[in-house]
Image (tube, rainbow, N blue to C red; front, side, top):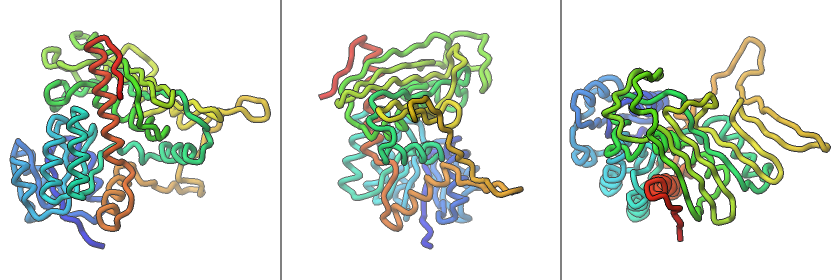
Amino acid sequence: MKKLRVGIVGCGGIANNKHLPAIKKNGNFEVVAFCDIEKEKAEKTKAKFGTEDAKVFTDYRELVKEDLDAVYVTTPNKSHSFISIAAMEAGKHVMCEKPMAKTYAEAMQMVEVAKKTGKILTIGYQNRYRQDSSFLKKMCVNDELGEVYFAKAHAIRRRAVPTWGVFLNEEEQGGGPLIDIGTHALDLTLWMMNNYEPESVSGSVYRKLADQTNQGNAFGTWDPKEFTVEDSAFGYIKMKNGASIVLESSWALNSLEVGEAQTTLCGTKAGADMKDGLRINRIKFDKQQIDKPDLSSGGVAFFEGESEKEQDIEQKVFYEAITEGKPLVVLPEQAAVVTRILEAIYEAAKTGKTVYFS
């Protein structure tokens, strides 16, 4: 099989802990170019994942000039759009981390450049590839839930504020938990509903716990002075077909009901949630019923098969889209709608007014 030559821009945690291990496991990629504004990070990442002759850069504009098939964009949110655009205009396919961009305008620029250049652009919403997500999506496609007219997108952490990188920096990231983990939950929900036409958005954004010093944080103590984003955010989205979605997100919230990258769907035939594994609720023979599909890969005595992880499937889909023309799972047009809604929640919270779309 053809090996693809790829470069990566941004050599932080998401590159080293998600994309590059999956790329290495896939075996059909050669990482021949590394870029980070901190050269030492790029050098260390190259030593671990790069080819022997891989090059190191501190300027993405130099990296995209290289002989590459694809570029991975794993930088802070602020730079997703212009790095992705530069790569596509240089003739490279792009895998960009979530969220697609800080703003809807930037996301749509990316969509337009992908169309203009004919290059593949996909966004790192890897939770679509989980076994529970895949199973539920098949149920939705098969109309087993009927019309899904109400849904919830869950991204609630009790105390898990990321204390590394620039997560707490509004200028670099565009926001806090809403744009960081709320984006995954909203993407899953819209994808299950196959509904990308919002009519209006309202929302509330809070910074209530960020200044507290008694933190109990899973990732260690954060600096309140650096915490320039929200610690929780909530949105209400009404779709043009009348369906509605409640989005909840937090890094810090006094709640015992936690869970992220989860969706709850309520349809005319059945409902589903991911609160205790995947659960399907329906009425059968005039009785309430709950089904829990067995999504394990075992079943043979003394043997448990190892299923593919979602990030492994994500790389496989990207590779086959480039080399075989197979369809993407995450379309840039879909990811742009996620960004549009997140941006509208921030705007609605800031102005106190509902945001309406034409």
